[in-house]
Length: 307
Ligand code: R5P
Image 1 (cartoon, rainbow, N blue to C red):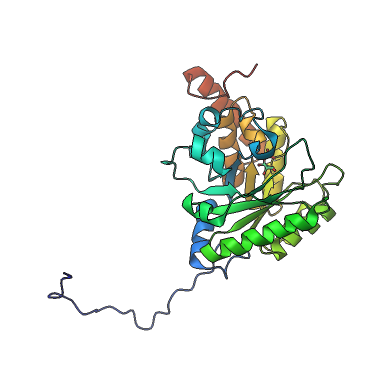
Image 2: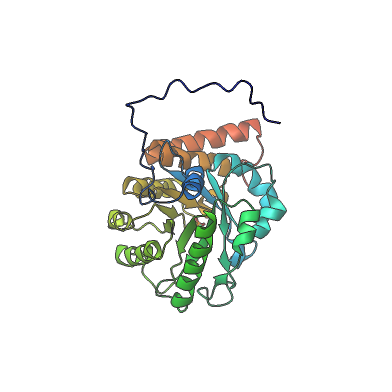
């Protein structure tokens, strides 16, 4: 029975002090509902407005690619250094301990493989399962200019509508076919379409020329994929340029987990993304963390010998 004997009257109403009405820190997100904002604030650090998302969902069409042969061994030690984990439900349930407290960006489209046409995807997760998995966002690939462009936009629309009912934001990933140029004109078209279709965050590639225009014309936060493995300094330069030109973070996979020292690399990427560390300094940090880890024999400085 609630205690009603000692209910004290309120005393300090701060009369004359207007109710605070803070703008939400992420671009294009101020009109979203509380749950949606709260999930986005788990993915993006409110102190910096940025995120280092670790993408390990490649198996959904590539199978056990280098570095992801054993997610339980190679990826779990990286999780504490990531702001969010982009992953399939199969990998999450089987290989990631539920005690992990990082937000999950759940890969929610699929249905093809590297043996077939990549744009031929379907919605591969029911929103009820995303809720069950406590997902902080769902991710859908969109293939602008691809053979199944219309279908992939349809997938995005379905996931956005389902997510909106539960306060779960949608990350649209711009899949770029081999025949298409990854230039500012194409990326600007693809990212803008995704945002206009309702995506709350868009993931795309960095381009050398005019990336700032791509970021400026996308009305929601943009994160960049790392793409194929580059030398570490080049990957750090790319992340730096992207952030400098308006990206809100990275959703990086191979350039972290295919490194010789993935834990060192993710920390160097964090320095660039959250502290605007210059690439040369971040690379020094990578080298020194790599050296320390090798000296102390700390676990999984590198993915176990794959030769
Ligand atoms: C691609 O279809 C997947 O979403 C990957 O997770 C992705 O592109 C990001 O990984 P990476 O940095 O390896 O390009």
